[in-house]
Image 1 (cartoon, one colour):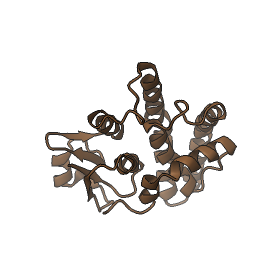
Image 2 (image 1 turned 135 degrees about the vertical axis):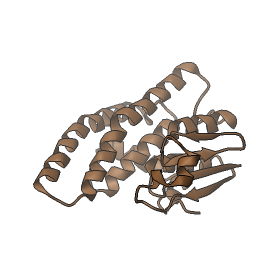
Image 3 (image 1 turned 45 degrees about the horizontal axis):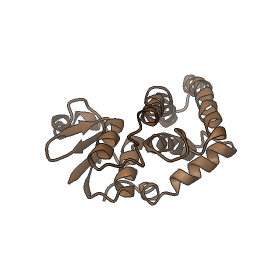
Image 4 (image 1 turned 90 degrees about the vertical axis):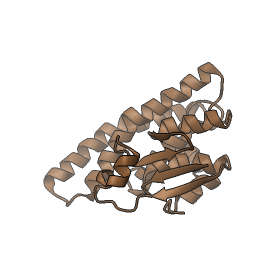
Length: 204
């Protein structure tokens, strides 16, 4: 059985949680409850020297990085609907996972972090700068969804789960007014039973 060590409001944990729920796999949740520098707590540091806020514990391994965890779960349980064996389709999914991790996610995290800071003229300029950088990535995602139902093709994949958790963060922060294709896509992903469960803190 898996144990998912996570910070309850992390989008990285949410995407793993959704997959576990949708695949109806057995798992335990071990929440990291303290926001104040939780990476430095000794028990977490022993669990994950990389200081990530999400770790999957299996019978034989500790694995961090949400996308690596998603791929492992799909491979171990033959979840080919979520991560197909077709090499070209899998490469397309990987491409969108990398795009989310390397391009979209850092901007989303920085924007939300800046919103938590005490408002100041400098902070407002920083937020405006991040918004400007974020805009072309949202446009790119929207353009992709004009042409197809999901980011990697005709079927929902782990790439959709990953990107939707970041889009969710932007929506609840009031930082995104999605156009029609993005809204339709997000509603389809967010209506998954597993996704609906993540709208509550991942503590049970």
